[in-house]
Image (tube, rainbow, N blue to C red):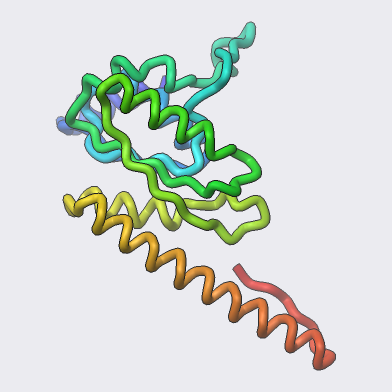
Length: 184
């Protein structure tokens, strides 16, 4: 359905293609679209399930999950798409291996995928969208993998420092008898 919608948008507005960025389920959707489309420029996948140990099928096709790793042969042939994976190795919702397995299978099939390891600060270590945005911006600008990796590393360091400072302020306010309301 999303693939057909993109075709309609492309035809109506006379577009050449799309750049995509996703987080979690949106990234899983992008993984599925990689096997169907040849008009994707930047495809930035943040914490998406891209590889299942087995194919998950339900009696309702609308509830099926994409298993992008099943299509690595097709995806590898598409040299126009720059695929970037943004992964927190400690993600509690989407294990790192489901992105890394996809990247490895894609490389074995002759394709390319860049993977950036980050540290999310939410409780589940799943929210990598801000880092995915940085990767997408770099991709759109034509930045090298090294440049993007450097920017993301700086962003991770800044995010962790800000979080540590906020935690210190919260502990101090609580200790001094105040009420702390954390912000995110």
